Image (cartoon, rainbow, N blue to C red; front, side):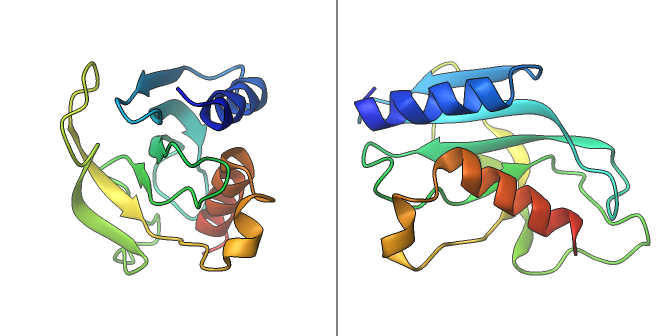
Length: 136
């Protein structure tokens, strides 16, 4: 894995030390990350979810996007999921050694301002996305 990916993983391990965190290196120098049991709470029916995402070999100089969560995600009040939350997907999108593909819901929260990418680490982006989800 490239240095930026290793650094991002260290930051994630520190932030989520109490949760199961799995790393699956990719041939390109990046890594797939899977964190289990991240608290959700309101407005979702589920109390927790797994979250998966890919750190490219350009990390930290790129956006961490998209994020994937449990396939049965639903709002507690019965509302349907709507964009930028998309059901019917899989994580990871392609075959990854050691990481079986699983059904998933995609959370599409792209940061289009490239000047922010290096300032918003994958850990900060994940926290931002999870905060956005729970404020819906």
